[in-house]
Image (tube, rainbow, N blue to C red; front, side, top):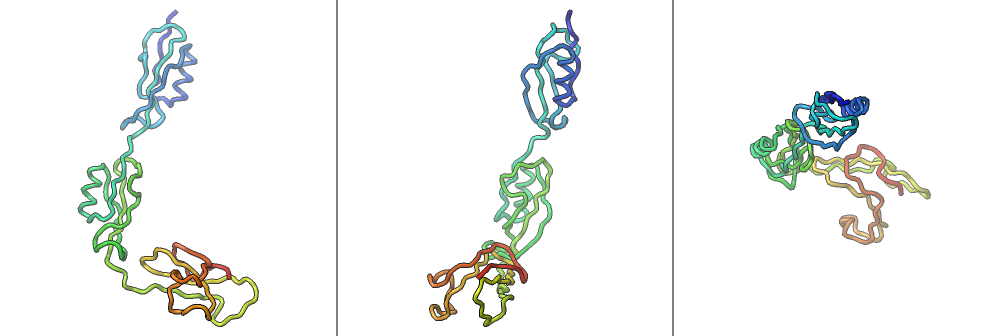
Length: 212
């Protein structure tokens, strides 16, 4: 006797496969494709079609949705805001939050950070946040060793606490040297008599920065 192929379109893949097997049919190849209308993991097409009369064990091929096809976030770095809007619209995305911060590397009003970053795959219509340069950072950084205090003598390992703050911080480095071997005005990174204790890449406030 022939079997009527059940309609499994719109079902979750596992549910549809179970229905087909329960009807005495087999499973054919499964193809995955993007769809703007059918949710990811649901069956959007089948072959033979629902209602077809087929022999028992007839394999039914399924097409399963991958959901909405993602788009790639364009590179907005060094763009003006107007240029970024055009690039985003062309990619099917929208401009999200816009903030500003000092930057020594980018001219005023140029984008120097974005989130998500360029190359990320995201759903269409997703907002992309950007940070515009407000110009050079002319404020000196705040750098201070807060513990132990000055002229403290210790004969065992001591935790060091400090504060490092700067609007355009790339990294900080804690070094030490014997006072009789270096000029204190020398830049530590260019004198072999200075030895590194630790390096950080974010601001700290009266927090642990290393052990000496």
